[in-house]
Length: 123
Length: 107
Image (cartoon, rainbow over all chains, first blue to last red):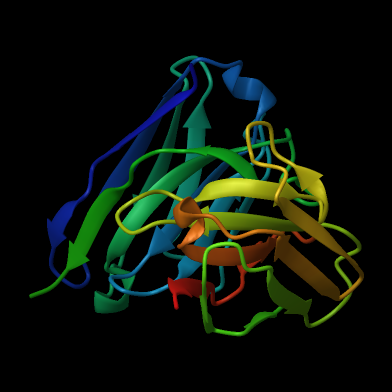
């Protein structure tokens, strides 16, 4: 059974940092890209970042580029989203999802999702 | 970035109705278009990938079509479990983008 378990969310002040983790199980981890998607309260889905199966290629939405860093440790079946210089508008439920393919460009979507971890940026 | 639009933003329908949702990309995305269903408090679920490929376990009343910039999700006979919000998403470029969503409500 494919499982994705996010952790690391919480309350942080503007300008602060958080590191989200997503631990995966039930599949060959390094064969799949991993994706982060967020959803602000009452809003739609926003793609945040993606990483290829090898970890060699990472991609970021313009809204987080330069502030967020995505990495993965294939020996631990875990991806990490380091979030710095957090803003109020980063407040959202952050989902980790499995890419259907190894690569991100020309991918086939995401077929398994975690339940999300809530990030609240507020003073 | 490629912008995605959806129409309508919401619709009211009855069980048994045929429902069609349209998604448009700001430039050609070939067929790298995926459709998701999301219910309140739940993670999104992938319904269709690469425009028309039905995911395993998804009922055959769901279908997708389109190429280039214009795509369609069709529910042939709406069921009670189908009231939800539907999102299209392009994965053609390295920066994926979602449409704003279409909420399907009970008429």
